[in-house]
Amino acid sequence: MKQFALAISLLLVLSANKCNNSAADAAGSLKDKKWIIQSLGGETLGLPAGMEQPWLQLAGDQVQGFGGCNALMGSYTLDGSNLNFLGVGSTKKYCEGIQPTESAIMEMLTKVESFKVDKGGLKLFGGGQELAMLKSE
Image 1 (tube, rainbow, N blue to C red):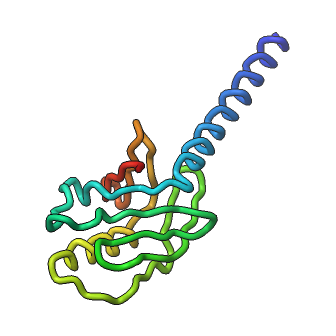
Image 2: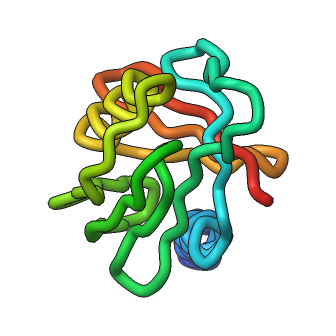
């Protein structure tokens, strides 16, 4: 009976360690990549022709990116699948055709609570719903 209990305990410890490694692998696959924003709230970004796609990149404890008109910068925290963007700001140019999209990106970043990396895509979640879909460059 003791051997059975020991085997079950060992199985639980090993499976728990595998879950932690899986979260660490997902977090590792998130960093140091340029993530191109594909959609916000399930809707494809509607950008004027010839505009550079908005993107984000996590490096160290900093986030940097491009909102379509302005450079984005700030910090983030990452704990397992939990992700929060902190103090994200931007340069202050005004670009008429893209400003609503850029404002929506900035607002979305304040709501992010978690993420999931799936088949080369990054999904950002907050409030129980998908906020954005990004693709790795």
